[in-house]
Image (cartoon, rainbow, N blue to C red; front, top):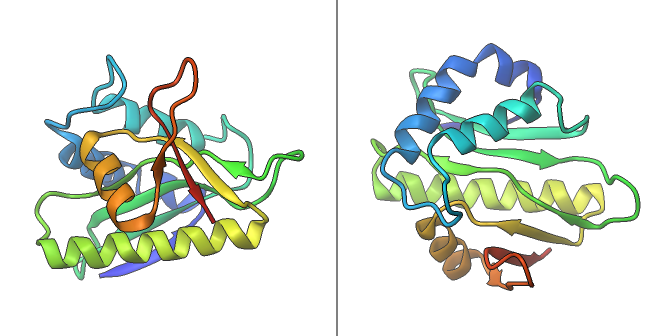
Length: 161
């Protein structure tokens, strides 16, 4: 397994593989936000790759030994915008075909590298929604994300960097 921090040009060149992996990873998921489907992670990631949310985003992309996309941590901001030091992360996933030990190793690597990238950019915390119930439970248990609802957003999670 190889995990690389890539820019939008790499994501565009691999988009069909990325979309296929996202579809497999989120098929049958129980999303936290009402009305969400597998199209939400695909459309949000595509919007960042196409530059609709502005510059300064990178993505962690995991490939197996054959070069197939097997996971990702998308939409990691690499530069502060304005005075905010909180970041809303994108989607994190692993395809269902990989075994539990490899999945844990991949997600651990994603988190370590994403946290380091965000700290280097000057971010002090992550404030984000959790896409799925499983994601919220895992990131809370293993990486210190705290469920912190606010009026109008019951799906808000925070992680101090």
